[in-house]
View 1 (cartoon, one colour):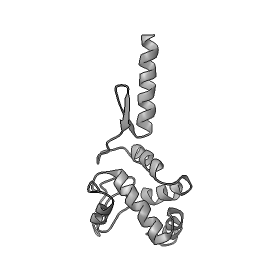
View 2 (cartoon, helix red, strand yellow):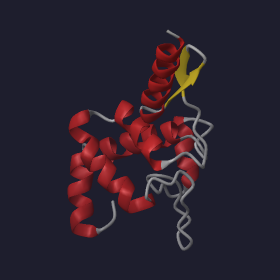
View 3 (cartoon, helix red, strand yellow):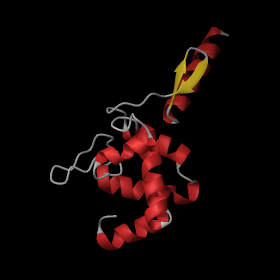
View 4 (cartoon, one colour):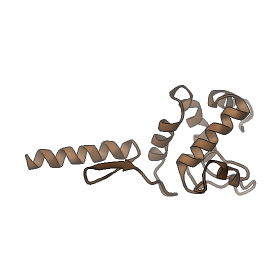
Length: 133
């Protein structure tokens, strides 16, 4: 029974990690992200926030803008974060932890795309024509 229990705990930890969740013993808690959070974990966080029918477009924009790097900074413009907000401090409207929290940046970016373009799908259509959004 001990081997089964260990394997089960390991399997739960692996699945939780892939979904952007940290396991603390037998308790499952949301993962705390940092600037060094792997892109796959940040993408899992986005999948929890962005509507499924908009996720592919949102992902394309973030991939092109920052390669899923939470602290990406454009050296010429100063645009910052996953969605390259300019100035980056605009993301503070979504949370004080905007500099390092991918969830905060994703929420702000989703709101920006919805407000400015109507949806991430429409923002991606614009990006494809102009190579910016």
